[in-house]
Length: 265
Ligand SMILES: [Fe+2]
Image (tube, rainbow, N blue to C red; front, side, top):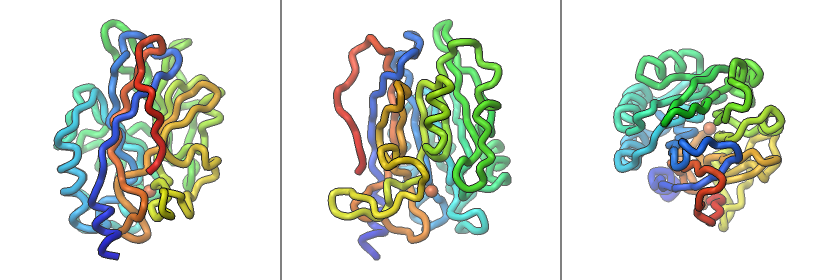
């Protein structure tokens, strides 16, 4: 198990370039720091490890895709301190945003809001850049609590507005694609967390097809990214599936994009 803990603390950084259709040209190069499934409190060393990783990163916005804490009914004593230090370490001048995961409580939403993370619970904000506007929407947990309300989150958007949707899981991806979301960001699966050699997950705990279980995907033109997550749940260990902090760079369709396809691990 010692090796598994070592793997858990060896969080990697990844940079992904995605070109969702309809992205306003003014947002070409706009970057999103994506942290999902931190599960803070599993072991005391995790929070400092996350801080070390994100200290060297910079993005326009930061999105936390849920599962801040270990379990809804418990988390280690370092949870709040860890989250505070992580928020302080993030460099994202256009703001920090978050959605709730199936391990989080409504109290966590209040705490995150107090710390400076604007929690999006079936709602959206507008982000402006050089005279153009995009929407960043977020929904409540679609997996366990199933309190997600996509229609409410997307309501009020100007016709044709480009929307980035944050949700804890990919389980509402088909609905989001149908409703015109341009980029879908999520986590939840941990990429399997404990995988066979080669990164083949044993379990991904989702109702979605495995094609959306980890990494980059495409659904009827909507671009998506499922994070392998930062931390771990059930057991504080990872095998053949490193945790990740991802910087997603959005590119306007006609601009040059990096050809690399990323998958996990
Ligand atoms: Fe999780």
